[in-house]
Length: 51
Image (cartoon, rainbow, N blue to C red; front, side, top):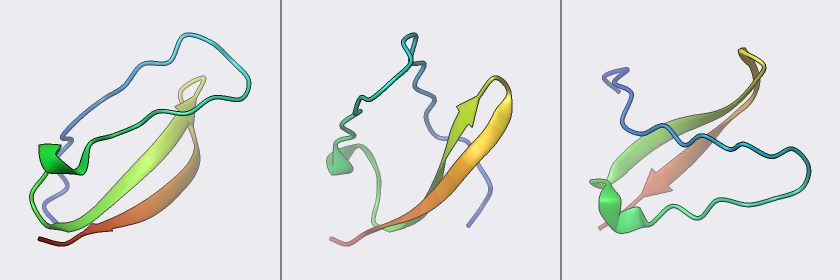
């Protein structure tokens, strides 16, 4: 893990929703992604991509 920010998605509405990220945008590997609300990290999850 290099700690490099690869993508930022801004969501302008609150409430239930979803964002679809295409796996072919990234190389195989382990990625961490976080939900940030009002400048604070709410949750962080892990995603593993294989070839």
